[in-house]
Image 1 (spheres, helix red, strand yellow):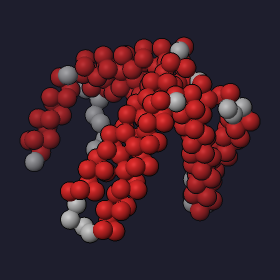
Image 2 (cartoon, one colour):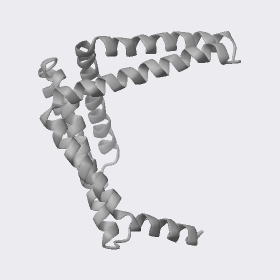
Image 3 (cartoon, rainbow, N blue to C red):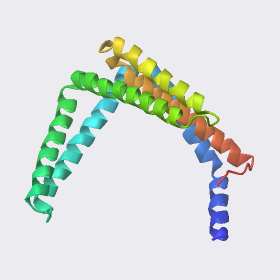
Image 4 (tube, rainbow, N blue to C red):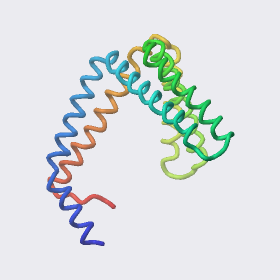
Length: 188
């Protein structure tokens, strides 16, 4: 088992340049997204729409191929129709779709903040629990700020978040690549 692990680790280490290239490309893509947030927002929204239509279509196929009985078929039918229609609305009404997805994103940030606050309080007096609470409070405040700027922020928020996420992920891959190049061990 350790031979396989060592071999896989050696193969990954030899290809550190690919991780570096991926990281640099992600950073470039992220910076581009930050400078063109509306375009990226629409592209992300269209990808979500296509995913919904495809998923809804598969659920509708499941209606005719399942052997689970009429209750399951009815659920697949309702979910399939709803998901397909939601995807079609995202595809054919992109601005309204951006507004809806932005509202869902803001709600997600708010709920995430509340959960972090609750987890931090539950973890007290453990070290670092106050940082978890602080992060949760920050998320709730950010969601409040975003809600005050809603729906105007809808045209850019998803693109900006995608850009910053790509920059962060790209930086992680660059750091990972340099760790592999310098033969730094990775905790397993």
